[in-house]
Image 1: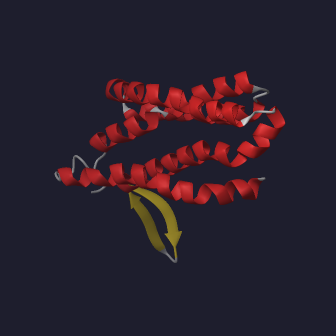
Image 2: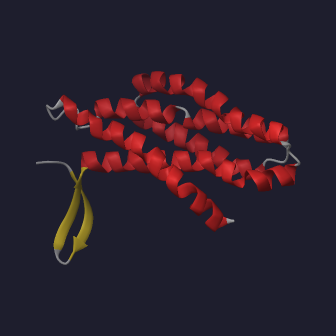
Image 3: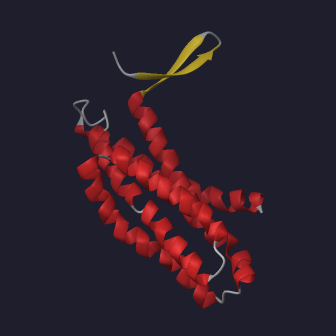
Length: 175
């Protein structure tokens, strides 16, 4: 019997989702939120620059600071996912990135904004590596068909495009 997650009943019909597809959906949603968080600053940049009196050069440094932490922790995330498992890496990474995404609003100047953005990048960096590691340990890969590993990897790539498509409107709706 296949592992199912019960979602409820609609018109008397039991609705369920295979465990593998549920994991893929979670990877997709997590990746979409990751890109949404990352792109949100660029949409809000004119207001932040005005509030903190940041010229375009310093604002560029703020944008770039995210990728310092992100680039370093892509490697760390892959190593950690192999050692302690992707689920643990996801939990830690999403906690760090959620906390520091929220702390972006608490930044009071250039230095605090830089520190928050670097650590925010450190939290988001492991996501892609852990997603790749989870595609190796996903029940899809143990189903006897190695070609089925493309669904988790594809979901963690396609979320970027959908998220970037929706981000500007979501941010404008919030401001």
